[in-house]
Image (tube, rainbow, N blue to C red; front, side, top):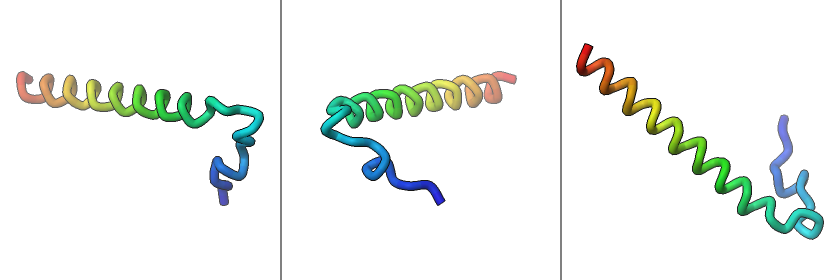
Length: 46
């Protein structure tokens, strides 16, 4: 079973980890939403 990131990452050694992981997660979610909108648009037109 995977361990939570809070036990894998040392906040003292990597203070920006939380911010970077949030930015990457948000970018991934936005990309997924854009892909879904494109797919729905193609399906509606096709």
